[in-house]
Image (cartoon, rainbow, N blue to C red; front, side, top):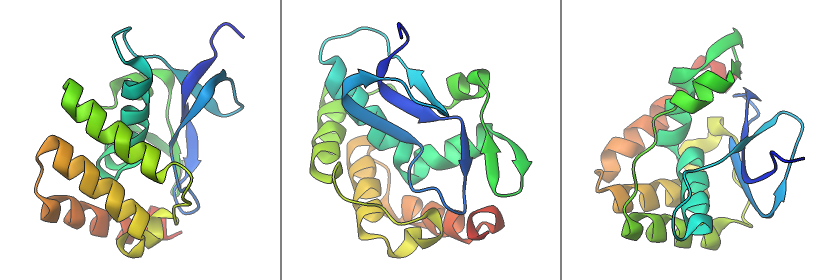
Length: 157
């Protein structure tokens, strides 16, 4: 109970059915198959948690997780606590965190499609555009990664 968090991360996900890997909730929670994530205490912590949730569910966040994972089954990633800790995430400036948190608020209630449908999922594309804008990454770079992720055999099932 003491490990509850607003930000949770899925430690085992089936890539062929997954839509998200991270979730942010207004109240601190615990969950089966969800690992509580804590960020270093700073000002605007909730904003930073929302920003991180959006990033971890973007194409770049998912590709980073897949690269850190040890697959048990072709379509299932298995993330140990050490692997979750080692997923590379950007050190966000206050403005970048605000931009991503604002995008999180816009899309928090909208359902994403599965990763296999990422290239046609308007919401996932919008998340990726928010990440590209905040981190100053070319849109075509993220679009290429999204296309390759959606064609990955473990994502296709």
